[in-house]
Length: 102
Image 1 (tube, rainbow, N blue to C red):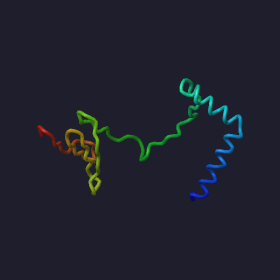
Image 2: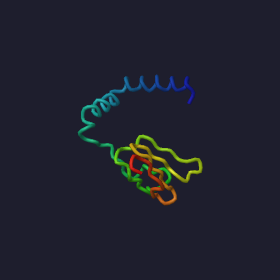
Image 3: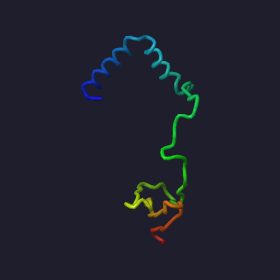
Image 4: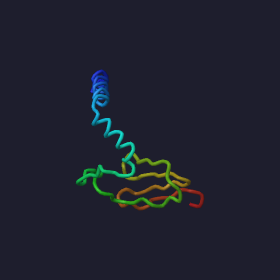
C-alpha cells in the first residue's frame, strides 16, 4: 500500500472508530476486562510453525545466548553466551565448544 493510500485508510479508520459507539464500547471493554477475561480464543489451530515442527532442541549454554549465526554453507550454527558453541545442523549435536575450559 502506498503511503498516501495508507494515510487515507488510517484517517477513515480513525473516523469510523470515533463515530461508532459499538466500536468505542468494544475498545473500552477490551481495556477494562480484556486482561482478566480473554474471550478471543481461536477455534482451531491457526499458527503454523515456519518450516515445520521443531527438529532439535539446542541445549548447552549455562546462560541465555545473545547471538546466533549460520555458516555460509548452512551446515553449522554458532551460538554465543559466555561460551561459543558450534552445532552440527545435520543432527543437532555439539560439533565444538569454545570457552574458558575447553
